[in-house]
Amino acid sequence: EIHTVEEKTQKLPELRKQLEETKSKISNLTEQEATLREKEQSIHELTTRVSHLKAEQSQLERQIGELDEKLNLISSHMESHDEARCPLCETELTREGLELIAGKYSAEKQEKSASLAAMSTDLEEEHAKLKALQEEKSGLEAKFSDEKTTLRSRAEIISREIGDIEEEGKKISELKASLGNIEQRLAKKDFALAEQEALTGIEAALAELDYDPARHEQI
View 1 (cartoon, rainbow, N blue to C red):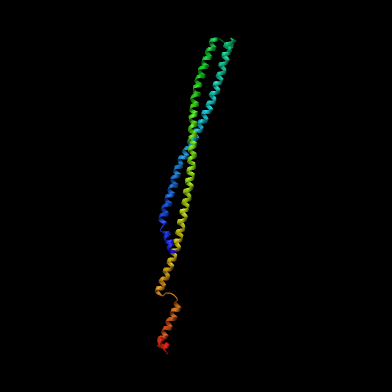
View 2: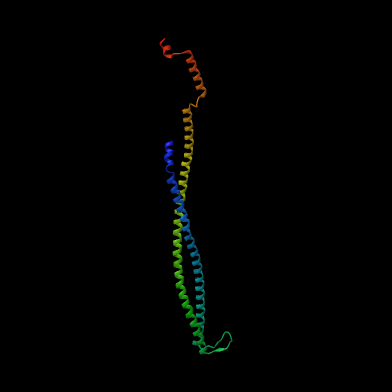
């Protein structure tokens, strides 16, 4: 048993090295997770931008629709030659006046339509970026979670093995100390003192009697 434990004890330096390497990998993984948090922040900001773009897009579409209604109304007045009045001052509008207003509305519609087209392009690009970031984030989350679980499990196993070997080593050290003490006592004959004293007394008595065991056997 002592030999087996001593063999295990020789593995301690390598096990401690493996434990430190595993802890270092866990630490590095934790630092890498900062990248994941940055992507989460980017996703949040991009999602907010997409929401704003959608709101602006809806507003532009509504404004363009209102301009279409106004242009249709002016066009109908011009075609029917009906009397048209300014909605603000109630004065009669001439054909030239209607054409002037229609031109202004047309220019405004053209400007807003161009903005809407550019905004739609931006929105598509932002949607693509958002989708790519979300997929990348999902992949990193799975990777970090699996790696961290594996590394932590390995660290626990190595720590437990080191603890078991150290505990067995302590018991063996205590056993060796006890054996050493016994060996010292044996060397010094520091054991069975009462029996040793009795034996010494018997040997002394035999010496006084001049007892010869060989002669005794011969007789």
